Amino acid sequence: MILHLTNSANWIEAQQLGFITAPSLATEGFIHCSTEYQMRDVANKYYRGATDIVLVHIDPAALTSPLKWEPPAHIDGSPSLPNEPLFPHIYGVINLDAVVQIIDFPSNPDGSFDLPAKLTAFTVIPIKQVPHLHQQAAELSRIAWKHDFPEDTTQTYLDMFTVSGTYAGRFVEVFAAINQANELLGLATLVDDDGLPGATEPGPWLAAVFVIPEARKLGVGTALVDHVVSRSRELGYHEIFLYTDHQQRWYEKSGWTFTRDTLLNEMKHVVMRNSL
Image (cartoon, rainbow, N blue to C red; front, side):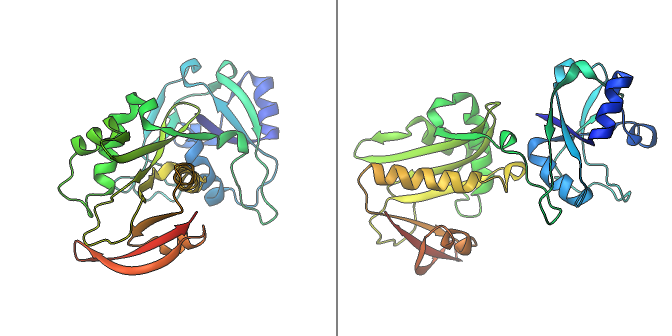
């Protein structure tokens, strides 16, 4: 989803002109836009306290002006940093035929912004239901967990997705959070043995929870964890465990309790427990 942030007065003017423009088109050569996962941070960084703001939902396929995905153009002129997410830039006016809808974007009492509910819709499903996302999910998993499991490869995770579900007296179930466009937002796993050396906990384990950077702060991580906890309860378990190296406080807010300290690859982790 591509969104352009403007105000009601500019939208009224655009309807009279027959197209949407912006000052940046004259000064920078393009109109700034964002994805639904980038818009909240953009609004809070540059428009905090603004009122009468609306979001223009744009269909990229209907644009008559060129669309380019590029590093962010910092307002202060500073250069882009490595690994910054790409933003959609429209090199020309936005024809009204490309406008899908206008979405009210009110600020909170403190001037901050939260995305409207219609932009944060996603669902959590077994990863077997989205085989077209397996390659991307495997590559992201390898990168996310290489510090804990340096020997794992992309194929390691592809194999796991293939056997996701009960099998041979053991089990592993991988769940994906996807948005309305069928794009991957995050992953979480329920597994009988999460490979922690010397662990005496009976399992099962919540494992490999991660959310892509663009989808953070939308509740995706909480939804994934809640789904795995509910699935454990559905399977008849009375407790579930996890280990983490830096997210202890985040899990404590969701009812997880500290069990013990441990080491994995000479790095300090904590084991946590959730009673079901």
